[in-house]
Image (cartoon, rainbow, N blue to C red; front, side):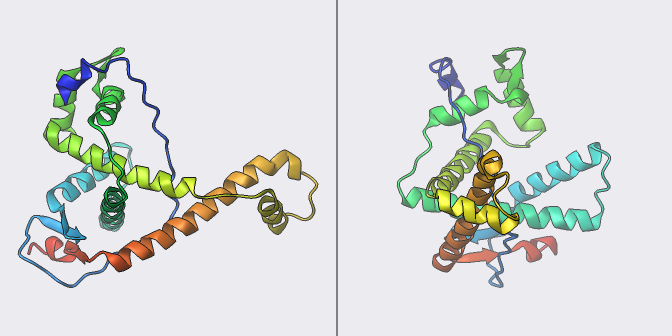
Length: 230
């Protein structure tokens, strides 16, 4: 992957940032296997407990550094949220693969090259990249790159969902009237309300897709067992 940078230094990649507005999604599962390295299985693919723990520890360390009280209640909430996010990411990346979506190496390379943590001044630093990945993420470069590729694949599926959301002028007007008395400032605030409505429709559609995927994919949670040291 690093050797790829020298071939594509001029590539400009614009990542579309999507806000994943969904309600809390909990995955339940009582089946336990001998896969002691997994925190969950989604569609037959294991989610590493080691990677889960690293992400939890990174978030908790960041909270402590910011002066927040990372007590047991907060830690439990962080674990649940990260577990949920990792399961959803796995579901979305699997579905994206089934739909023929791909993440070429150059996309991951450009993301890494433009990540501020891996830059010295205005230039990408391979030394800083290796150092940061090992020290802060506790991963090898290949593990980090595989993780980013999966995250980008899941993001493409989210983008696919978002791109299918359509909002008509009549829907925006009805949405505005549901929150205001009359149309006094409608023209001035129309864009803001159109964006809000798009996010609402995206949230509903994303939740619908999650329910459909959950019904088709076998999901097993080993989190409770892992936390008990089993």
